[in-house]
Length: 178
Image (tube, rainbow, N blue to C red; front, side, top):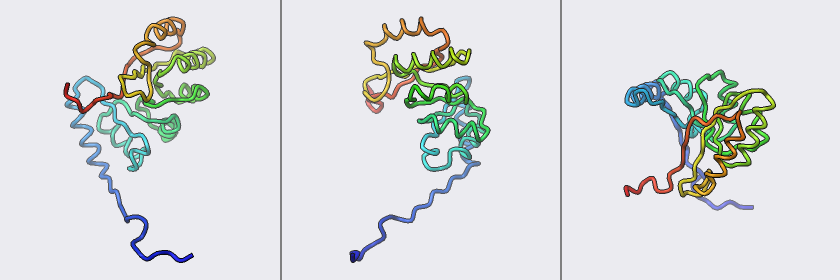
């Protein structure tokens, strides 16, 4: 096979991250947040910048929560020794509930099925797990819809080992000023 002449298939790209600047920027944002906890999203290996060193720099700068997309990302941070609370922004398979509990990763309750699995895992370990509700505010990706709220409230009444401490959503029209 003969290859056609032309440029290489990719550009040589380098990303340089100044971790001291990350720490300083986190400190500035933390001061502006006041008593409201600042959460920094570091999913996808901190968007390619290196989740562990970036998380440490953010922690040093006063960030009080880290957000990840996958259970595996949170476990990696815990195994690296990070103590900052971690919020799982994406879904977890019910089979991963034991990992969430073991590694102190705060899950998002995004369905009644997942809530039931989380309750069972917490019951088995004799613990109470803090969780955040993930609401679907119109994007249609992940989360509980408005019509599911009555069922959710009933399910939460039957889930004494799950304590809801937060709520979040991906805004369907974040750039719409209306």
